[in-house]
Length: 282
Image 1 (cartoon, rainbow, N blue to C red):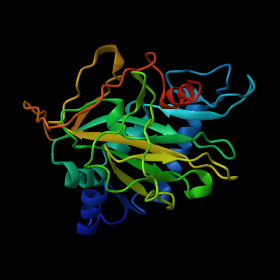
Image 2 (cartoon, helix red, strand yellow; image 1 turned 90 degrees about the horizontal axis):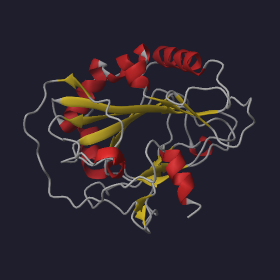
Image 3 (spheres, rainbow, N blue to C red; image 1 turned 180 degrees about the horizontal axis):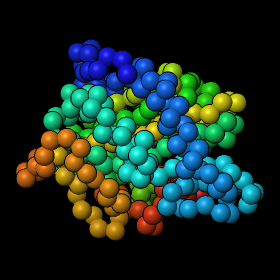
Image 4 (cartoon, rainbow, N blue to C red; image 1 turned 120 degrees about the vertical axis):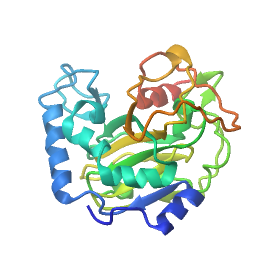
């Protein structure tokens, strides 16, 4: 890894714009190890023979197709990714942004395969599961060089201190912003493999399909402050894989004044991709 902490400029960028970028944070050697583990996880899986608790396959492929769209819960299930989520230098940076008591709360790997990698439409992470305050963020690690052609992350700066946009239609959660938003200031985060993006839970973001001949594999994992408690919405909520990774459990829940729409999921267990695809047919 390079410099161990975020600079004052990076901390200020996160505070003002709702994201910051740390290039070269993960070494090429460590990236190679993570890619080897991905190959092991995927193994010989096909569209007709795979573990749905581990993988999500790209739609519209032959039964023998081996196009994987997403790997679930890598930072809970697989040692190299668990180590990534508990890496001291990573946690040092996160502590600079949301404080010393940190809870790991989710992870996945979006594969973005060449010429097919699925689009992710504009959304805010807070819309998927409500918290008592906004001290929550996602980290995105590019495992491949990323640019506009292979579907790099896009963000809309300076929206994280505003309201949560509507993500529902006729009372049903669509997994994407369903109102008109100004995308004129959107920023495409093009960067090399090993770059880590720190993304505020209220920052609108998206990514385009991969139209290139190169992959754009990305590990995404998240943390919340220990005093940012999940709001229990019963079966509409997500699977809880939370664990303390630094500091201690908080016995106080800090509530911010927020007006947040409860996500009423179309059905239990649907992925972001499936929810967004369903919304196109409504």
